[in-house]
Length: 286
Image 1 (tube, rainbow, N blue to C red):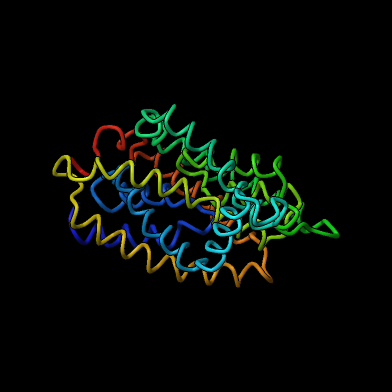
Image 2 (cartoon, rainbow, N blue to C red):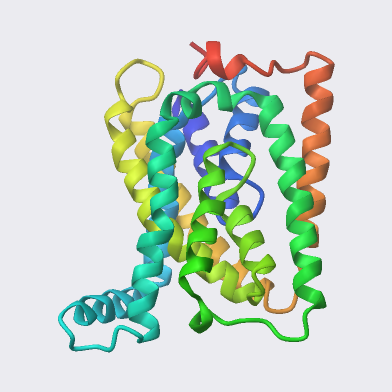
């Protein structure tokens, strides 16, 4: 991977990480279409997500510090354990467990078989329709829940939905936001919790995959660092935009986009323009 490819993939990561359209799918697709059939690899994807997740920490810094403080003080009895921020700390921890456990259990499949583009196409279209159904359900409700009403059951369901994002094409935000909408939460509340819930999982995955960067001539440290920094800057702007957008708009444009791009990629696969298994045999154009 050269510097230009890394910069482009960093921009793609920043643009797609927080929108419910799957950043890992777009990294796969961009690599296939523009970089000689190259798959940037799960390690590169996981590490560049450190950039976008750092953007989350910067954007929600005050909220995160307040939650951590309340959670820590609740452990020693200085804050009521029923305090919303203290409970949020526990919900983020518990909600992060499914993706951590499943990620370790199915690491080999995640790095290889699940990166097949036919699976990506199915997830893009299927989860897109699921997001559309969840959005319509949320719009039909006369009252929606805020994050203060989050409970253990909902936190675990959120966590399971996030774990589905281990499959490229699902989308971490798409899965968790859909779950939140089906559970009756407001669009902003569902999106906000999706962002907070992703922090432990993304940092754990990215830091774990750091060991795989630079092992061969495929993905080196310099381009990876550049892509990560660019992803963080672009990602911060996307967070600010998305949180304003969903105050008054639905997720319908993202649903349409997911279905259309799934059909386009399916067409390219059927015509042999791209190969579904290139990710398994031609990583980074090797």
